[in-house]
Image (tube, rainbow, N blue to C red; front, side, top):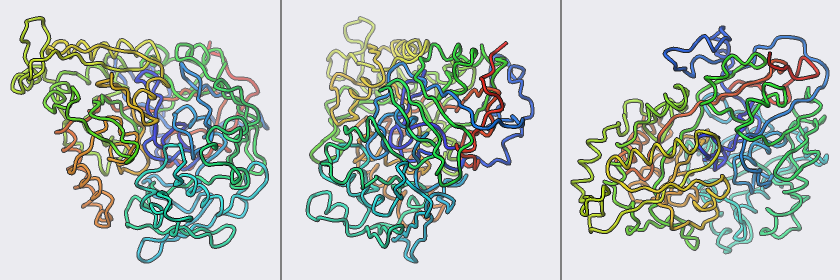
Length: 610
């Protein structure tokens, strides 16, 4: 089953609630972790696996073990964990928030799927062939793939999605370097052409896309695989689509369930799509409801929900013995991080515009602030070891590219103070706080999100750690939507914010351009440099088809970002999901080959904890 989260260009959120904004579009049902490894740990008593007060994600299985006979039909309740409503932009082509992505994943999906190595397969709703020169992909959509209203999903729909995203009046976040790499897209985007020369509709079910540059990323995530129903949207102005009733109140997809009714921001009732292309779903209904992070445990124990989008891993220690659930866990494609606001978004040129006058533009200051925090202790004390010290910006979920030899910047407050002294940050007036090298007062505003009972204490830990090396940092807590609006998810950066605490769920493709490229709107630090451009470009070059070459490039990029510190990772994250004991055929992770239409229940009612 495809992971329930927004990984399509934003998958961020508070450390406590792990609401994430996706780095790369890869939501929807698709293959997961290899099932051969699903049941290596036969001991389901996770409460007995605690060692010295700490747990390891390796203690968990990633697939439900329920082998009882399923009942016919049935309903499950899914808890969307959040302290804010979901925004309600319910179309992959327009959405930007993690919560909307989780709603979307129940009723819509990509046309392409991928294997445990994150390579596109021919097992999805569309199959593909690649030309000899690697530039042209020809896709064929299966004949039995239909929209929920019965209309077939066509090549025109897929081409139409590209036309909308590439349109000058498009107001969503999807247009990136991946789209600009399509032949003729930039001319179309700039209004110099009426069509995209590199996209050809061959027949009702066949589409070809020709790319300018050949890249290994074309096989691992950079192809846009979400069609847009042309028969519904073609008569709308592009600028009006994202706010239309067809996106907000009556969304459509081709996934295993249909959005039957929506209470905006609060709940959705999904009914099964009997015409689903993989086969009729086992369940009759899925009820999604928003639940506050503070009530997750109560909802699970009483059977109010069967499963949740996220369980606060800091609460696992006290609930490991919950009798009515099975705990699933795996290493997530995610990390939390501290980001520094180094500039603003240049809307006219659609790129990050660094500002050397920003308070945190001094790299020595950023290096010192990383050395000042003990993220190993944070992971152990706040999360009992279920989050652990992060070292680089490519997480261990991508073992071919994560540089496990790179220690990042290790906790060393004395070294932090030495770095600040050498850079001229001194306490001139003896008030306990350092001034800038120019002798001016230095007060930094640190933004973080609400979410659970550890959200503010965790943020306060970082503030105190920086205070201990003489930095005056003021914390401002805010809810999820406000947080990302002020960071600039719509292109307007709040100049009052100097640094922030966020989290990413990265895409299936290792390519970091969607988060750290000059033209990525989710590059919230607004960092840009020629060297960063060079490394990111080399990572998706034709030479990068050679695995060793690509590994060397991303190793160098990880070293470069550790040196420059536009952001620094704090913790690598688990995916931890409690599942009611009546649920079967549910898996988490990548490459399992388990899909949502297969979910079933073995009892009419959710089991209640003893």
